[in-house]
Amino acid sequence: MAKLSEMTIAELWALFPIFLVAYKKEWQDYYQEEKDILLGTIKPVSCLRIAHIGSTAVKGIYAKNIVDILLEVEQDDFMLCLSKLKNEGYILMDQQSNRASFNKGYSEQGFLEKVYHIHLRVKGDHDELYFRDYLLEHEDVARRYEALKLSLWKMFEHDRDGYTNAKRDFILDITKKAKEIYQNRYE
Image (cartoon, rainbow, N blue to C red; front, top):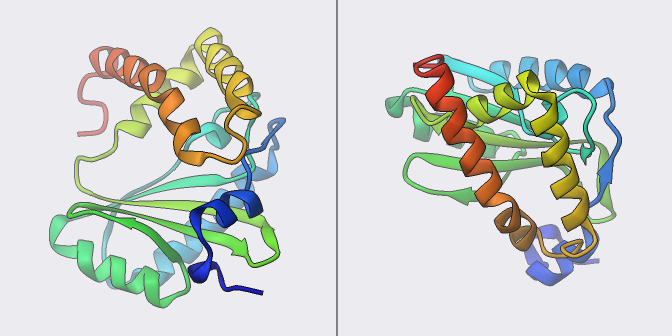
């Protein structure tokens, strides 16, 4: 069997399809467990913020069975933190100058019981917090987001990029509204 790093994008999407499940209260516990692991992993880097983001942070809505975690650090600590996460077995999926994405809980046989996406960011790059808070405080909008995701699920079951792109306008619109309302909540 091929290693994950040797698989094509089509093979990866076939092995790890988009699938949505009803809200699970365990996601909050999974976040807390991984938060403790992450904070121990990145020492001596000081974490400015660590937060549960994404749909699993919004009680009551369907979500991918993946816990998203925002890890915000100072610009000067970014490369050291990136290196520490890579050395501890987190799979680097994407790296840009000021942000990186890591996965955990993926195997050659498919998803493990606990799956995480870690979003490493530099100070000030945290729009997901505004989106999350808006959904938490506006149940009608959370339900609209859930309906959008459910409508896209089967269409993009084996196309993560397509799924993400199809949600983009909704997310950007709500994030903009949230930032206007909450202003500098996270600054």
